[in-house]
Length: 267
Length: 273
Image (cartoon, rainbow over all chains, first blue to last red):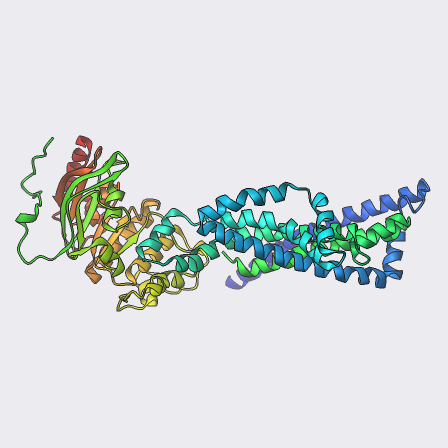
């Protein structure tokens, strides 16, 4: 009796697992299939209407660039990666420190928050040339632009995160006669982490945009420089390949932040 | 309107108390004002050490404010409050009392055990002498029936379990006075019954003085030795009713005529408020 029951249980489980596997495969297969189908339509469309490659290259032309010109792509990938990461670090660190200052002092917040909002309202494309003029054509200007674009979302989220402690938790801290620094390190900072990671996910993709915009304005290396160069030389397959690499860089950074979030924010 | 005490509901006033009784908390003519609004007016009470008081009253009568007054969260506008003959601030710094909120107020990133240990980590910077319970945090979790769940994060625990962690946390500094603000208000009936029994056991085992706010009349009668009835606008003491029921209480007590008589009496008092 019990044996048949066990075997029937196993039998019951098997379709369940298979079902799950099929569902999981569907989660990957459906978007992947759609992407492949779109690429096929693109390929066929370009060939069918005989679109010249400098206007719109076929996917196979872009693939050929990846195969033949990858040293060129890689040479321009590293500077952009370094600029993005440096900008990410500088911008977010500054935002976190300023958020801490804001939460500790209403006066500091009143003094500087309007300025932060003002700087944020200037389009990054408008402020980038100014920064290139100030910092020159080297990496510094790109790092500053990438940092600037990360700064504001993190500032706003971090302030909200540090203030997200419930009034009751603060009452608990008061009953425990906790000092300001104990409240900060043991309550406010951990409370802010989910908010911080939301902001860092935004920053992971925008810092790449910042670095590339900086490279457009004055640079001889980097994905941004390569985009400008290939556009003006009508090397469209290279341009497309560069765009894919840029978006790949963003995905890479975003994934890294998401993994870090899953490890840190376990609640 | 004054209430005529029934023969077996003795009205407690300080001078009738037997000599030698130690007082855990004393309120003398205490008032609390929020701007022009008077939340509590002229409250005079003596809560003896080791007693279990429940506080009832219509909403807005200042039940929670009274606990906040005793726990040094709001100041007295008039009058005086002392805990074990110390000011509320001195009592707070000495961890003479602990607070259990309606919401468990656990830190979500800390395990159950780490949450219980929180009071031991706080206040160190000020060089406070933090009293420590004879029971370890693990033993306290065991006392509230959470053995084996030490490493669980709050979101992995049910509402009742979270509240039990909060009770263990409140006991970790060996408080003389436990202030509880509707701690079981958000729980389902079954869980609430279980926790009521558990709280009675903890009270009898530790000898802690308890002030317990509720708006459930049966809960007030079941738990308390004395029920403090407050009335609203402004919050004042309406009456103090002794609950003369056996000290060992089981859920079945609720079916007894005595129990229901107390409930009826309190309901009537509440309606008069």
